[in-house]
Image (cartoon, rainbow, N blue to C red; front, side, top):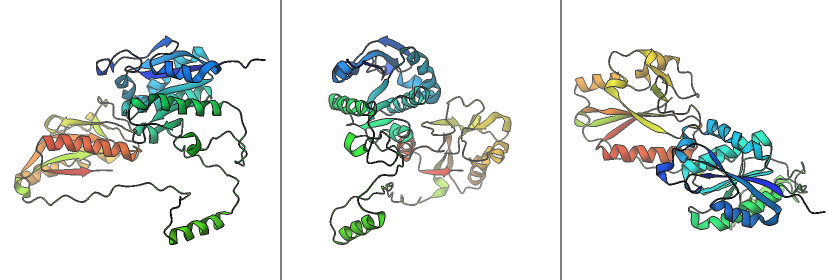
Length: 362
């Protein structure tokens, strides 16, 4: 008896979905029958074991405005196909696309309980945001690796639907080794049968390290960049200073849609209109779920010290306050995206000729 073909749905952004470039990044969801663009390579790799039934397409800007909500919206187009497998991308190094691929994989996996597979470059913010919810294959940083990336994604997907029991795991569940199938670890801890005890393995690794020989640790620690401090300001009373905060202070209604958790955006507000000397506390809200903001909402100056800066300028201790305030939310945002936002804001501040920054947090 021939095996029943698997039904596959594939997600693409507006570019790979052959709708257009950045000029079409604001388009909403649409669905097309069969494979499109990279989906053709996906179908070829799937062979006669599976059919790409439909391709769901959405613009990167549209999706990134509210990834979780967009993921739910995409489910409505996917559900009629009752897929056995779901693929997204690959997104390579494209940040917005990576977040979209991760978010829709998360939504599909949680809703239908089927394997969800995507692909990203290691520096894509979507990796750390969604590695717990999807199998994310490692890719290069551009589409020139498309064929190889899709091949890895397909190999992993077939392993996931094989139903094979994993003898190396105490749980016997089907959880392929990340290093063998080329995907980012999902931060899932499982007990594994080993030939040696933890104590024996630790001593072995210690001896190898003492002999200055290469070894691989079983515990992977995060790597943090060391940043040397800049030179001190020579003359504060002629210096222009800009205020930046990751505390999530925004106007009432949050018009720029900063997220309270896992935020990926930053924005600017003009201080004279955003925080005048006579302000109303009801004009503000906090796009941050990591602290209790009652005192900030009563007086936003306690997060963004505009009042103190105005006093220092009157006293001649500071030269000038930059007219714009830079606002973002840093709650549970992956460190890589934090670094990217810092670079983006820094480049803009430098372009404006500002000499110093005061960064306030929660």
